[in-house]
Amino acid sequence: MAPTTHTVTNQVPPLVGYDVFAADLALSEAVRRHLPAEPSAAALTELGELGRAAGSAQAQAWGAQANGNPPVLRSHDRYGNRIDEVEFHPAWHRLLGHAVGAGLTDAWGRPGGHVRRAAGFLVWTQAEAGHGCPLSMTHAAVPALRTDPALAREWEPLLTSTVYEEGLRPPAEKAGVLFGMGMTEKQGGTDVRSSTTRAQPLSAAGEYLLTGHKWFCSAPMSDAFLVLAQAPGGLTCFLLPRVLPDGTRNAFAIQRLKDKLGNRSNASAEVEFEGTWARRVGEEGRGLRTIMEMVAATRLDCVTGSAALMRQAAAQAIHHCAYRGVFGGPLIEKPLMRNVLADLALESEAATVLAVRLAAAYDADTEGERAFLRIAVPAAKYWVTKRCTPMVAEALECLGGNGYVEESGMPRLLREAPLNSIWEGSGNVQALDVLRALRREPSALNAFLQEVGRARGADHRLDGAIKGMLTELADLEGIEARARRLVERMATVLQGSLLVRWAPPEVADAYCASRLGGDRGSAFGTLPHSLDLATVVERARPVER
Image (cartoon, rainbow, N blue to C red; front, side, top):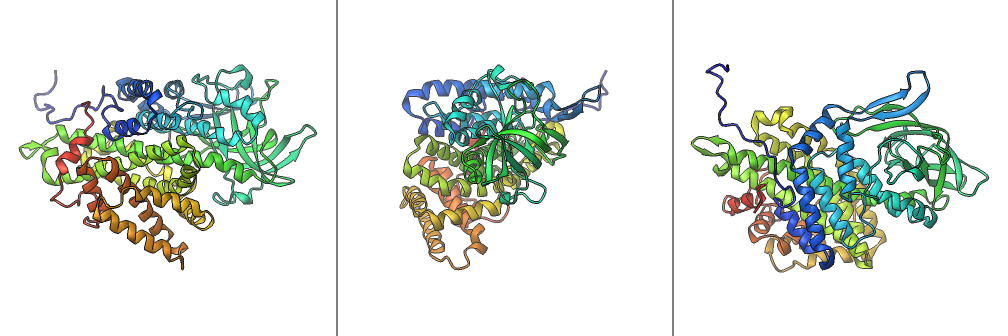
């Protein structure tokens, strides 16, 4: 019998049993806007099914279990034989299996594939973000492998399969495979040209033996990896399988798993190659150019993954405040809290709209859209991933002490939030990539300006921000030292232009006033009080309409 003093009141029901896709108006509207007419109905049905699965109690339990039972390295078997395997909780495999089955590694071969996959990735990783790493790497390996048509014919059907098979076996015996990547070495991360891993050619064309060390190797239980090594002709990209065609294990010694801040359900490893068999991808000496095809695709996933974290954080905060009573009424109706929630909702919607727009550019695959992506992807990756951590932290604070305990799920979101800003090139790398595109590819700047120019004349604050951006672009003196400032301005102008064109007037007005017009403080919750904040919050509330 419970003590009479232990009456629980004013607690918020869990956000569970809802359609993550349908409840996200910014996302569902973006999908309808960018999808071609032919696959639209089927895609919306698929995304609805995935959204209901992501919001289910079962998926949420899998996410908690996968993070509560992180992977364990099994370097040797009971007899002392080296096996170099990583053991995952069954929930990890269930999450991956559902994701692969939903087509989250297949964007390249179907109409509207990138929009469909980006939306699905944004939906499903709200259940658990860590397993997004092998999904992203597998999806992104396709354009790199296409530089070698023979390799692409062999591997692409397995990479884009909707069948997930765990365990290490010859790829020819599996209905689907996952890929990882290894670039970073002990001596440094960003400067991959200084790689010391060596590749010795064998007599068979395109075959090599690798010797070296990778400081960070993603998803070590993947079936194969794209890695960089120094061949006689220079830095080269290689495909390295875990299991050789004859069924024997490739030389792939896992030295340890990284003990990370977040992303704890996922394994990142330090690995050693010694006489490790691999196949060349592309030409010798062009490895960086080859693997950058993979990096570009994973950078878009960094934007989408951060948008997913931001959406889930905002959804949890708004849901909590809708049910929490304080000072005689719901917390969501208190003017100051409403200001905070509206600010979070704006940041989330801006990230979502931008992520889907980038995915649509991949689908279009025209010369103009490819040029646009060369600036828009690093600019978006820089800004959206950096906004993620402070935004998630503010959302956690909306739950008060309840948000600081693990059961709420908010600490997991906060630990995950910095990852995408670091992965695939940190902020300075993205800013420098934008500068590189500005200097070397005039068509990229033209495409970017055409995109933001489509909203010109619709909002005076956006027009002023575009003018200020053009002034900065015209002055290249000392531009590297102010590259972050420039790229931030470019990203916010791009977000503002998309919202002015496609978001409800209340959302576009609030974004332009606060992000472009300067009518805002430094913290979240400092929007102008004269804005229609109630409409902004209600639009972002995670309820099906």
